[in-house]
Structure formats: C-alpha cells, structure tokens
Length: 343
Image 1 (cartoon, rainbow, N blue to C red):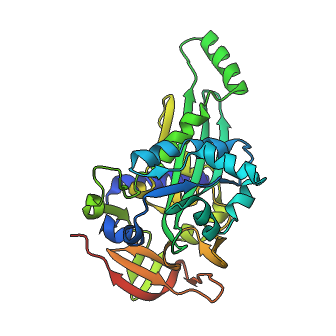
Image 2: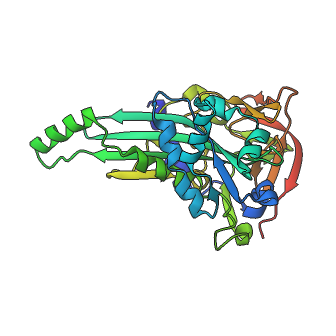
Image 3: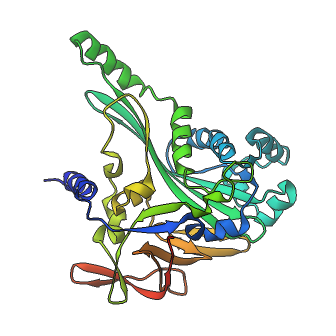
C-alpha cells in the first residue's frame, strides 16, 4: 500500500471515527490580538508567488477585494494602489512587500496590511478529469504596532470531469482537457479567498460588527497535552519530507470550484499543503523573526490550542522550536499554559 493511500485512509478514519479531540474557543479569545486593534481599512499588497504559475499573484490579489469588503472593511482599490507604485517606479512585487510598514502607513494611512503567499498552484490530469489545486496563506499586520494580528490558510481546487456518455464525448473531452484544464482562474481565486477569509472577524461596516466576539470556534487539536509536554504525530514534524498531492486528493467528483475549510477539517495532513519550508523569515519593521508555519503566534510566541488551552512552547534564541524524539513519539517542551474559556 503506497503512502498516498495510507494517508487517505488515515484521513477518512479521522473524519468518520469521531474520536478526534477539539478545543472550543470564543472568537474573541482566539483572535485576541485582532480584536484589541480591530482595523477598519485594509491595504492588500502584491502576493509572494513561490509557484511556477506566473499569473497566480494577480488572480488572487484582484479577487480578494470582494470578500474583504463583504466582511465589513474598506479595502484600498487595487488598481489605484498599483498606479501609485508604478508612479514611484516600484513594480516588483517583492520590492513592494519589503517597503517598511511605517512608510506604507504614512502613504496610505491604512489600519492594516494583508500579506499573501501562494504556496501551491498545481495542475493535474488523468483519463477522466483535470484539476487545479491551490494553497495559500494570509497574514494581517497592524500598521500602528507593526505586529501580526491574524493568520490563515486556504486550500481550493477546480475540478472538470470528462463526459463519458459516449466514445466521441470521451475523445473530445480528453483532447480538451489535454489542452486546457477549463479552469476560470479568477473564479478559483475568489473561492479560495472567500474560504481563506471566512474566519476573519467582521469589520466596522458589517452588521455583526463586534458581536462575533462571542462566536464559538471548534478547533481540532493539533497535538496532545500529557505530563506537562505537547505531543504531536510524526507528520507534524516531518511533513515537509512527504510533500505529495495528498492534501487535495479527497475531491468532489463533479465540475466546479471547491475549497476545504481548514479549521473544521483539522488533522496535520492539511497543514503541509504547498509548503516547502518548515521555517520562514518574516520582517516586521526593522526586526526579522524566524517563524514556524504550523504554530499560532501571540506577539511572536509560538503556541497550539489543545484541550481548550494555549500551550506556549519553548524556542531557541534564533527562533527555532526544538522537538524531542522519544522512541516513536515526538514532543515539545512547554513554556506556559493558558486556559481559554469557551463560554
């Protein structure tokens, strides 16, 4: 049995067994840093595209305005922002992303900035179908404090199933699929952005502004709290060595555009989609932080939610988070435990 099949079976067992543990946390507690500042206006910067799809960055950036506006925020018009940077002869996406936050605030006076990373954009074909899978991550930084206040991932895909009603249909559809996946990339990007931003607290211009503080989020636990230690499975530690198309193999067998709700699905299988590096550097103001993609952060302190608790883990001076292997088990030392009330 190959690794892909084993992971699919493991995932299905996880979903249907009902034995996975989870933490119930009020939205106001889960996104405490966000609610403390609660931005009104948001500036969307060009996405960092780590894939070979040259146009991916523009598709995602131009389709993010609608879902942000629907959640009650004023979003700086992308075409006007682009026009400003072009007038300053700044056209490279990475150069724009590296502009100091203080300077961006001075120019645009935005309350927050959205940074997008496109981690995967993969096209697949087989005899009866084609698909495009995308994986991306978001980070929102408050411009006053220059601290990250919200982070999320999104995984979406398009599916096109070949008409198998006749031999002629199969041949015609197969030729079409071989030439083109039939994907409307703007639609796919919009679906990904809508789901990626679905947990973002609503803004000032939304009728539920601030009332969503009391909403309860059910978050699948990413580990186990035992004997004062945080235990995780092997995939959490070594997932980067098992990069395949595993996260998006359980698909709807129908034409259309679909997205996985990362938070509700849980499981570490979905946390590694599109990521090629376990750690990454993040510049905030004049400081550079080494962060881990699979932990949550409070003011750059890494933690995971387990059993309704925030488990802050120890880290080294360079920002790396050391783990200990004990036989077939893996665990992290805990620095602090904070109880989080759900009601």
